[in-house]
Length: 216
Image (cartoon, rainbow, N blue to C red; front, side):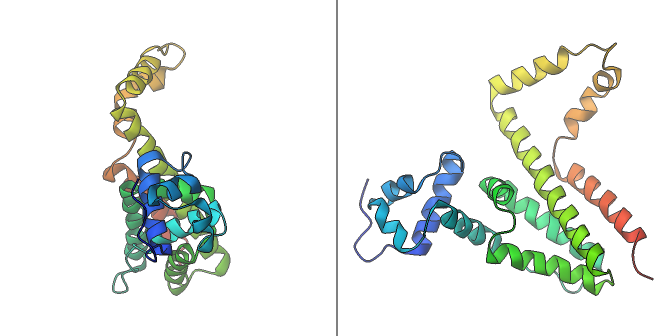
């Protein structure tokens, strides 16, 4: 592995290298030693910029969250909420390691707070009280994170022939007498494991419930 030229090591280079390794191998296999090896430097060189692995995790997550566009200011509040949720889902689909980073440390990081500030600002400007705005933010965030993580996992299984074979075999082994609805709706369940239509379906349900609570 070629060594990083003298005086060119930087926090930005470390973050971009860490992101590349996370996207190639997942966050579970990620280590500071691996990043140092990729850069051709000793592990201690990284501690000049990051205190530990969690610190670097936060920096990678902040880097990715910083790619999210600003909340559109010229749209009705439900469309602003949709834009934030859709943008976050798309970013996680493009960078699946972000879903793991958000699940592991959901409240850390400046950029995560910036995204929360944007969404909470939309809800407060729409007239929702503090508790409703906070509960709605948490509900929307966990919906996006959970549904997209599920979508990422199912897509990975589809790309793995053996995993997909095991899943199909498990579904086909179910007794129609014991699980009549699951067996009957198996094709429909398979079609609703991800995709834009399914994501928007769930998001629309949440927004429909929220609009009932819209302050008069």
